[in-house]
Amino acid sequence: MTNAAHRLLWTVVALLLVAGGTATLALTYGTPDAMVLSPALLDGWRQAAPWSTLAAAVAGLLLALAGQRLLARELRKPGTALRGTLSHPGRRPGRTRLPADVLAHALERDLTGGPGVRRARVVLTGAPPHPDVWISVDLAADICGGAREHVDAAVRRFAVTAGCQPAHLDVTARIEPGRP
Picture: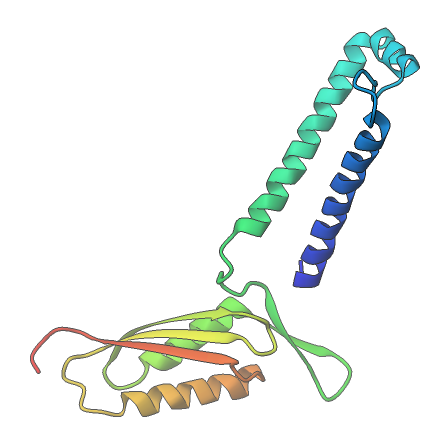
C-alpha cells in the first residue's frame, strides 16, 4: 500500500471509532442506568442463543485477525529491500519490467569483477523510479587504487542499464586485514 492509502485507512478506522464512541456517549448521556441495546435486540440475542454467541466469536476473531495483519504491515521495518519489479516506460507503447533482485545481483557481479574487490553486496530500497542503492564491498589489503573509480563506473552502468538514476547512493568499503 502507498503512504496515502495507509493514511486513508487509518483515518477511516479513527473515524469509525470516534463515531462509535460518540453514539454510545449520546445514548447514555445524563441517565446513569441507560441501556445501549434495546430490550427487543436483547430478546432476539437470547432466542438465538448458541448461534448468536458463535457469530459474535467468529466476527471478533475475524476483526482480531484483520487488526493483527494491519499492525504487522504497519510495524515492519521501513528500510526493507525493494521487491517486485522496476517498471520503465519505453519510447513506444509498452513497458520494460526488471526484477529488483536480478538488478541487485547484476550490480554485485559487476562490482566483483573489478581489481581487488573480494565481495560485494547490493540492496535496493525506496521508490522504483529512483531507488536508493546501498553497496558494501570488501577490498583486498594489497589494493593500490582504482576501487573508487571502478565502483563509480559500475553504478553509472547500472543507472544506464536499469534506466533509473539512484536517488541515494551509500557505499561502504571494508579493507580485509593482511599485509599492508
